[in-house]
Every structure is written in structure tokens, then in C-alpha cells.
Image (cartoon, rainbow, N blue to C red; front, top):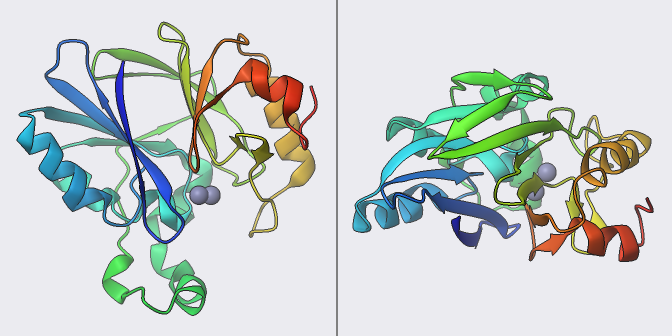
Length: 216
Ligand SMILES: [Zn+2]
Ligand SMILES: [Zn+2]
């Protein structure tokens, strides 16, 4: 799996560009601010065909540029528990603009989701088979995309290298997050590489041994 990570926007949210083995199709995982123009230019430069946008959860910094990818023909995938966040992005605009005054009204675009997925569903995107695991706690609609064949999981903000997602945002739940990590992430094989929504990669085995917040 050829993966390029681009940390973008005010929270350095990772947008992942994933290219198929055939070198033609590609998909994008998460759409932080500025990801649309930047990655679409790269997709065009490489002559790739964009098939999907996979959204790990509905927080603004993971989906605000999603409309660019939808307009370019990507099928948009997300979990229905975050439907309000994703389809009614104006509801969070004042909170983010008071935190980051440089954000313009134009930075707040909703995106139309084509397919709502839930735990156990499978998404076939750009030649890979992604199993959906529902990992609520940081956000109600948090999901991870697990490519068992490649031993890679895109985990959004559920778990980070030596850390976990914050649960002090609206509808966050600490106990639920720990349960999600223990039952839906630590049950993956130890060698599975975790690609989080912020920061660098880690693995299931490393986090089970060293994560200071989520013990197995
Ligand atoms: Zn988040
Ligand atoms: Zn985030």
C-alpha cells in the first residue's frame, strides 16, 4: 500500500493519500483544511483516479475539505452517529472561529455522505478491502479503517502514538473510549501499523506495551 501522509490545517490533521497496487486508483482518508486543493493537484499530477473519501469521524478538522473530494467524484464514507456534525457544519463554526480567528466562513462546508457504514461493514476502495471498526469515545461516530491484508489501520483520533483521543469535546466519553481501544484496537494483531489522525505511526503491539492511558 503506497501511503502519503500530509499533516494540514491548524491542528496538523493527517490527510492520507492511498494509491492502489495498480498505480491508477486512489482514495483519501480524512480531509483537513487545505487538503482538497493540495491533494487534488497531486492526484492530477500523478494521473490517478480518485474513488473514495473515507472520513474517520465528524470533527471539523477531519472533514472540512471533504466537499472538494466529493465534487471530484469521490464516494464519501462515514458513520451515521456523526451525521449532524458532517451535514450541519455551521453548528460548530463559532466554536472553532473563536479558537482560531483566522478561519473564514468559507472554511466551513458540509459534505454529502454517500454511504453510512457501521461496525463490521466492509468498504472496497482503490483495490483494498477495509473492515470498519466502530471506536466511539472521542466522537460518537469514530471509526477505523482496517486493511487486514496489508496489516494497516487508519485510526482517526481514537489512539495516537503514546496517547489517546481527548474526550472533553461534546459527546466525548472516556470510559467508552477505553472500551473501544481495548475491544476494537488491541484485539487486532500486534504487528498491525496504526496510522492516526494526528502525529506519526505506531503499532498495536507498541501501544499495548507502552501507551500510558490505555492499558490492555
Ligand atoms: Zn477529532
Ligand atoms: Zn483530530
